[in-house]
Image 1 (spheres, rainbow, N blue to C red):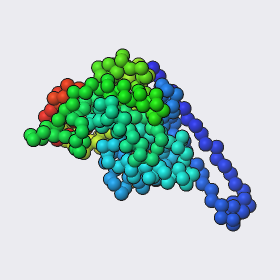
Image 2: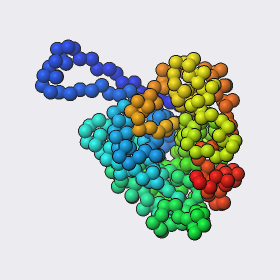
Image 3: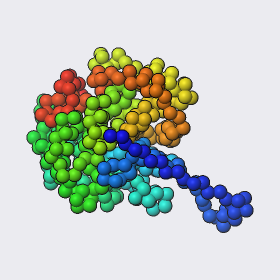
Image 4: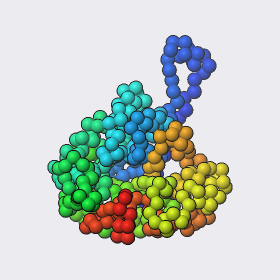
Amino acid sequence: MKVLFSRVRSRPIFFSHFARCYLLKFGVCFRMAPPKTPTVRLASGSNLPVIGLGTWQANPGQVKEAVREAIELGYRHFDCAHIYGNEEEIGEAFAEKIKDGVVKREELFVTSKVWNNSHSTAAVHAALDKTLKALRLDYLDLYIIHWPFGYQEGGPDPSPKDPTGKMIPSDIDYLETYRALEELQKAGKLKNIGLSNFNIEQTRRVVENCSIAPSSNQFEVHVYLQNRELVNYCKSQNIVVVAYSPLGSNERTKSADFIAFPPPLEDAVVKKIADKHKKLPGHVLLKFLLQQDLVVIPKSSNKERLKSNLELFDFTLDKDDLTQLASLDKKGDYRCWTMGRDADHKYYPFDRKYATNPSD
């Protein structure tokens, strides 16, 4: 399945010197529209911008400004989650920019995720209501199951632990959780529904038992963890892949094997290709995924990096570049987010070897 991208071009508006002076004299402000980001069409017909802003680890007090800056720069795709603890600030930024006329609600594509302690039908409904209230929205463009495994529900701790420090699991089947999403989409509160961190078998099980097909599956993909089998399966089912940690975060070490590799941004091959195209290593890493028809959601609160992450459409990686980058795949030896503490759960999606990383 080949995902087709569409680019909408903004036509520049030119003012004569006289017209500019007239407008300025009477205090009329004008701004050039930011460039439009290419989009990919989801199975529902919705258009998803291929570059979004990830908001995980965006600190309170910073995320609101980052989202405001991002909207000004032209970002229209925002990846959120209740567990990130910052949806209220993000909602404030959305409300301000919509009120100021910078963006219309229908121009935004907002994703959020249902957390592991809200997998029962009733809890999913309640979780969505909280997220919509926090984000100041009437609907979400995409709501996804954050992880296929659940935790004990009903307590104040979103990640409950027993006295030994182990997570307290829930046996709720993720099919129940997904069916709750279907109900909410039919009720008009969601435009699209999907998955996150689901492996091939789990994704296939949803596909074979659903009434509304998942629009996307969001999971870790970068040059060191290319996840080709899962990517190809999702494409075969018309499920768009959204790549998180597309730059290959190296914020957590997993083992001696993990730290034996330099971070992708410092990889010699990546740097050589970046020099060849007169671009930054981050551009190469993101472009590598875009040219495979994946959607990327890099995170940043720095204005210059926010701007830089959009500068991906003035160059193309050639066949030799792509071959070299494909050869950098470390398979499972470089996975940034293992959730190893949950490796005993029956719905854990990764190799059980990550159980040696319980701090995740």
